[in-house]
Length: 414
Image 1 (cartoon, one colour):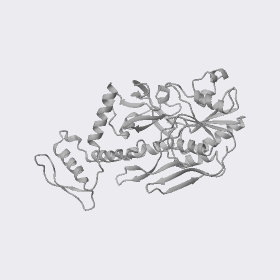
Image 2 (tube, helix red, strand yellow; image 1 turned 180 degrees about the horizontal axis):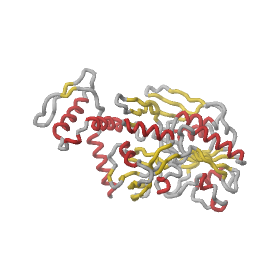
Image 3 (cartoon, rainbow, N blue to C red; image 1 turned 120 degrees about the horizontal axis):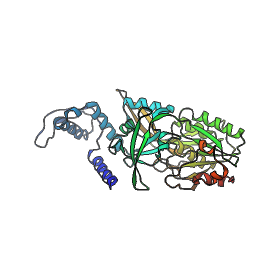
Image 4 (cartoon, rainbow, N blue to C red; image 1 turned 60 degrees about the horizontal axis):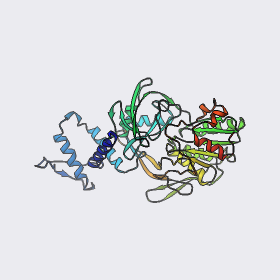
């Protein structure tokens, strides 16, 4: 009931207060009986801006907390309202100068915090994916968890950047998240000790009793291709004759890395297509020199697989290069172009959208697996660092049915 009330209130707030862009204009005049300030509009300014400036003047004239009337903060709030109204949840976003610096750090793969990708779905903050071995994963955070409170403060109506800022912090400090799991309909209070996050892109291990290497690709940051190719070579040198490439809970990363990683498994053709606002399409072709173009492959996906992970899985699926197993992915498919604003803030705007090699739309659709295998809530995924210490009996007794199905499809169950 508590969650329902919060969601209803949040929906009403969005309905009542979603704003248009903060533009250039001149607001003049006083207020009448109904507090409607006069507005002079620039020649090229949309008529709808009159309403914005009226609201701006009313707030500045009558809001009781005068200390809250910070022009920069209100301007950023107006921009965020415009961005949220575009409906490109979890991708198009506005970053303050401080958030721009944190974004660059995150792409490098090194930062401090809980180690989880946070996005927006249906207007609510949601965990896209926890990183392997991160404090978030160790504490029990799952992909799809809706964040309701941070340290007992309701954040359901906060801008995403503010939520992330409050979750991050110095290593060794604690943060408490109250999350709701939609499939269960109950909330959990989870305390997480923040840490230094330096998550490798690729790790691997040979599954016990098999000649199959499990390669875990956890993100597509700057060194993803180098780490993946090294993992493939090492696995083959250790005797692996087939691969399971796991991109479950992989939130994505750099487009260049998505193309290069995918190209390791293909000989020719397209990796993806990119469509702009006018319907024009650009094709990104496979790059030569792939190191795993013949070895049998199964790809594992789930709803925590997003962005570059979806490009990768969709391409191998379209080329019939791999069997894709698991659950439908997140559905993030816009291409972000950064527009730096005068004060150092940046608008990360989805100016194009991704399609798979064969032209299937990824945005809001996701990649559907060839073989659907759902995992119950709470099942811990087998990753290379865990697999290394398992016996054959422990592997076969694992609850990770997606991984076991992959072994079955490769005809490699021990």
